[in-house]
Length: 338
Image (cartoon, rainbow, N blue to C red; front, side, top):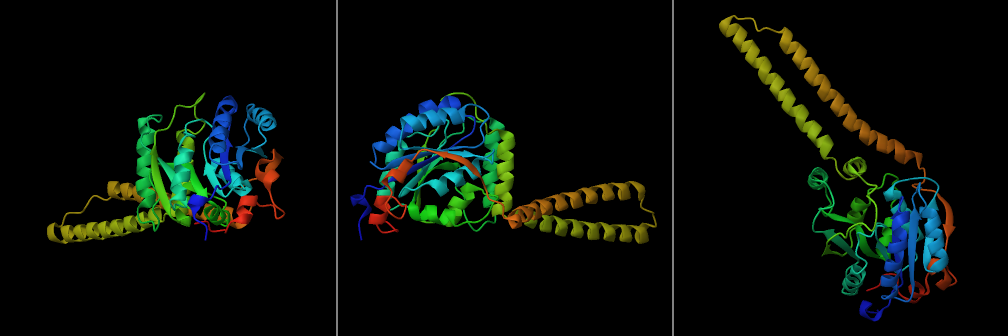
């Protein structure tokens, strides 16, 4: 068995991009330089997730300048989770890193992540120390989401840990084996398990422009994550139904006793109207929560692909592939590197 300290693994970096034309020209050379400093066999996979600006044209020019770069152009905007999945499926390295295209993930941390891998970690993920780049409302809702999704869940999704991470090939293969279409990658990273360790980082300022992932996108992603990895909403409905039933029995008992003890009729019109409106709202809320779960089931049973690639540009690690289409380093080493 070969020790990881004696290995120089090939590296893939997956970078989803949506309307990042002004950032790629700065970020791509920086990341490629950081990768080349760690291994002679590297590739950078930029996934254009249906951008409406010049992201594709800029990425194609960068592919012509850098043979290690690969451009995957999706047929439309499928969302960041699908773009990450496309990049993971295309990555050929022994290790796969995930980074954003806006320059907020420090490429200098890749060396520290690689060292943690050599020490035995299968997954090295970065945990942000602050959310100064987000509004107070968004930061507060993000913290609340992690508390809710982890409440009652059998897995722990690390709070403030995003997609910035380095993964061993066996972790990548495990992620590729997961079939769901409604993908919440932060939950999937945690679900597959493996030996994981965290490192702290401070997000850098965006290289240019503003984020394309605002409060609305965060809410939709949080809803996907909640439905995919937690049954807490269903349990809350059960508890609410139990409490309301007990309250209704208690109120009915009080009305019964009051009538026979005092002989005073309880005015019922306002009580009936208020009760009907309240319980109708509770029923609609319950139906809406159930509909979210059923809707996800409907999406899954159709078995549509999570993404479609319209064009691939660049070679990446394919130039160094062996006869079976895998990187030469991967063929020379055991599949479960120490």
